[in-house]
Amino acid sequence: MTSAEKPVRVRFAPSPTGELHIGGARTAIYNWAFARANNSTFILRIEDTDPERSTEENKQIILRAMKWLGLDWDEGPEVGGDFGPYLQTERFDTYAAALEVLKERDMVYPCFCTKEELDAKRAAAEATEGGYSGYDRTCRSLSPEEAQVRIDAGEPHVWRLKVPLDHGPVEFDDAVYGPMSFPIDVMDDMILVRSDGTPTYNFAVVCDDANMGITHVIRGDDHLSNTPRQVLIYEALGYDVPEFAHLSMILGPDGRKLSKRRNATSVEQYKEMGYLPDTLINFLALLGWSLDGETTIIDRDTLTKNFSLDRITKKDAILDEEKLDWMNGIYIQNMGASAWVDAVAPFLIEAGLCTAEDIEQNRAWFEKLYPLVAERMKRLTEAPEKLAFIFDGPNVTLDEKSVQKNLLKEGCRADEVLREVREILADESIPWECDPLQDKVRELTEKLDLKAKLVFQPVRVAVTGSQVSPPLFESIELMDRDDVLARIDYTLAEVFGA
Ligand code: GLU
Image 1 (cartoon, helix red, strand yellow):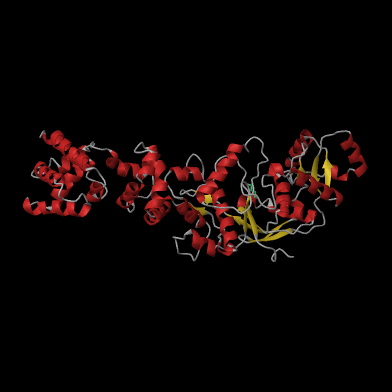
Image 2 (image 1 turned 180 degrees about the vertical axis):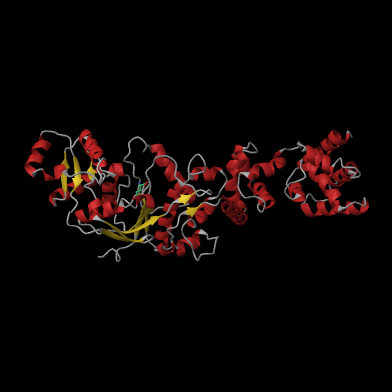
């Protein structure tokens, strides 16, 4: 079978070194969307060969971020699959087997050069006009017998690839970058297996991609220079070379490389900043790919139906924070009350406004908060501030500026308005619902001969504490009558000494 005929299988292969970087998340999204668009298999492989950083906790961080984004994998940790294990540290026997294959094919040789020798060679080469162009292949000319004697004597050695010297340029057709060609003489005899027996990245990744039947390698363009090396390893092992698609960088709004100091860089951070997973999927998908060059709201369904490699651009993508906020606002508006409650719950709890049990027991009430703010927020983090007043029971924190402008302004008659409104709100014959209460209060404009604003704003300040709030009577409906009356009484006493 040629690679074009094989069932499509793609993988996301993060090294668990900390949080999931948004560049990594975009790579994951592209692989996932490509797999879904082709009704094929998306594999998660954990490249955990760095013993210091590849902790269980770091692996869990990746899995959590993937699940939060809703990027479900068909094979990998927790779900298993026919091509496992899916952690590189559990695949060492496969790398050892591949090394044996390469030995048999005479495509590798042991190298006994010490670090000191290699450093000295490099320094000497760098001092010449041609500069350093890789390992000078000293050990390649050792006879097999001589090499074996040294191995048997326990001399430390690495295994290097015998790059075929008569090979023409290494070529591949990148789905994003187009035809790529690398002269063979810049390819040094790279190390495949270190002296402690561990595989190098290039070796492990080729063994895994080949053994897992990966047909398309979609990854960051920081790996573009590794690819010709990997092509040589595929060829040495006699494997088909997959298709490659290298993704350009994501730059910060200032056009500079994203940095932890200047930017939010991890999925976790975006979550904490109040962005929705749906927003991030849409937003990151568009950092380097487009549906038709103009559509900006692309939900998961549209993305997974239409994603294709040929619409990926090689231009660096700029992360536009304003667009991200705008897009999140759209997703919040469209998500519906139930999903909103789930998403906003941690923020309300964190702000101390309620507990998880409160939400569980009064879910219907919490869902009614959604229309109060759905069209007025860009990030979930804004919810506690906008809604805090509702959770204050009989208490209200009066904003000084709002009091001055709406209660104490000359001629505004706010004390009179508040007393009249209090009477209406205390009248139990009026249903405690937005419309009837609001209609009654509106009648005051005629009775008192005041503009609507002069009636409603004092009530807003007395009940919510501020002249800016979610819709007033929709909010009042969700509050307790006694609490609302207590707030008006408090305001009258506090502001007018009445
Ligand atoms: N583990 C590599 C990384 O995190 C990915 C390798 C690849 O996709 O080939 O950069």
